[in-house]
Amino acid sequence: MSEVLQKRQPIRNVSITDITMNYKQPPSAIVSILHRISGFVLFLCLPFLLYLFEQSIRSEISFAHFAGIVSHPFTKVVLLGLSWGYLHHFCAGIRHLFMDNHMALDKDASQRTARWVLVVSLALTLLVALKLFGVF
Image (cartoon, rainbow, N blue to C red; front, side, top):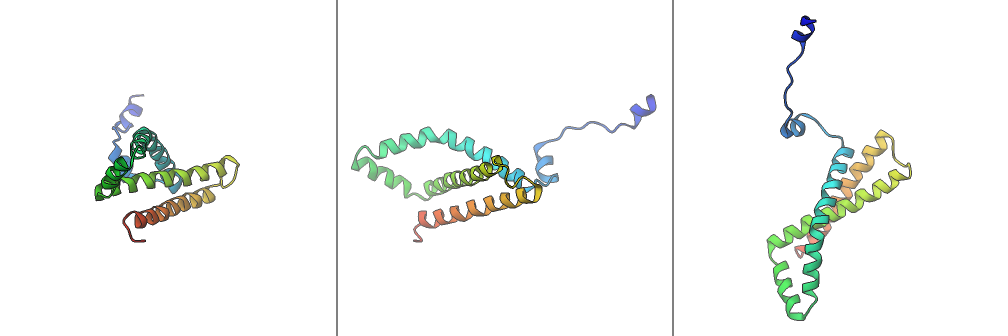
């Protein structure tokens, strides 16, 4: 009995850096985590965004005021981040609807659709960025 106790490895705490640096997450896990984070951030920002929208449509003066705020580069970056969160959440939600209907549930198809979610959401965010920063 004492030999078994002596051969045990010591218990050590695992930190978040151990998880992020030592373990490679599959694309489906990354998409799932980002889907939860983007949904949470959008949920927290929704009342504030609705308030800003309400204030901006009160009059032409308030609209011009908020148009001036949105023209600032920092505000554009924040809007771009929120746009990515919405687009990623939307694309991942469509993926989850397909999975709820028992489509693309095997490992290879799941990884492939997760990669597509990442690619499509980033491509759409790039289009939003181009429009937001005045390229077209």
